[in-house]
Amino acid sequence: MEKRVYQVWKGSNKFCFGGRLILGPDAKSLLVTLALITVPVVIFCIFVAWHLRHAHQFASYNAGYAILVMAIIFTIFVLALLLLTSTRDPGIVPRNSHPPEEEFRFESGGRQTPGLQFPRTKDVMVNGFPVRVKYCDTCMLYRPPRCSHCSICNNCVDRFDHHCPWVGQCIGLRNYRYFFFFVSSATLLCIFVFAISAFYVKVLMNENHYSVWRAIKDSPASVILMAYCFISLWFVGGLTGFHLYLISTNQTTYENFRYRTDSRLNVYNRGCLSNFAEVFCTKIKPSRNNFRSIVQEEAPTPPPPRTTPENETIDDSSADRRIKVEDESDLGGDMLQISQRHNIEDIDADIRSRGSNVHHNSSEGDSNVGSDYHTPPIRAEIRHASWERSQSWEISPDVLQKDAHEG
Image (cartoon, rainbow, N blue to C red; front, side, top):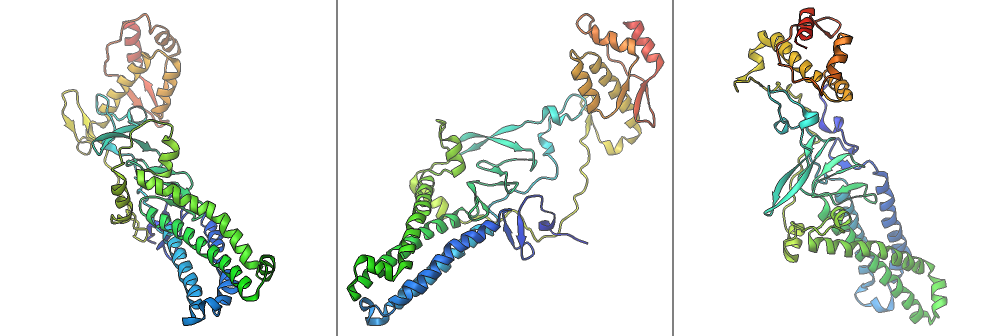
């Protein structure tokens, strides 16, 4: 049965509605955030806004209804921004199924040594300045500039800002704008509820000639809402101010916390106005992932061509008849390299890396290892060997006698 991308997704994300919505692994925290917004607003509408419908100050034109309608519309707007932030692709960079082969470095003879020769970093140019990017072992790709791997979602995210537990999603290139609008709108909603709740206490004092304490006792919900909004403002209001600073300097939260002590040049800062235009006026890039598409079976990648000493390229698909000869030749060279190692641990590692057990004559093996610093390099010759069903190489006796004679 054919599977879709979201069904075999290697990240830690959760999907809803057949892959149409993508959430973070901590999506349950989104329910907490929804409750923190909706419950206070419901209390406000029932115990404050509803009683202000026929207040003396709003007697004409029934203006008191506007407060109730405004609170409901504003809350729906904030919740929509929250869902847009938490249920869309934040800018996930698709994984590779294998390391980028064009980055492999080759030894003479065309043999790959990715464990030793694969570069871990490389430099790319950004706005005329070199920026070092790192290789991600999990996603098997070089991360684009400003990209980072989120350990919670287990994805590389373009222009990674941070992983927000309150929305249960990474904040990156494709949802940062909605995240900022959500935080700033939540700040305005707190100010609105706080101001109207304080106004309702004032209305009770004026219309009923109550003292402050009597008005508070008459409407405890107003005081509770004022305290709640005051505390919330320290969080969402401070977050809004912090991100205004980040946008004006074209930084991400990750960059600010990691590089704040470094005196490095911010190559992304193009001026305050241009930085704001980049965040709010540019078109959001489409997602690089189609989570509902059918998984395509990837064709096996052919091995890289071998290079002869005469720099002639030989296609492996057309040289099947020479495989055994080349393998025996490679084995001879490998045995020569092993015999010339200066460290016994290097020998063990080299043998294990080839996936086969090399059986040496014990006396000759000891003499080769112990004489590394006293004997000149041995001339490389093609060794004759046989490949047994037990998956091990046995060196023919005539080769061992020849080595002993030359030694």
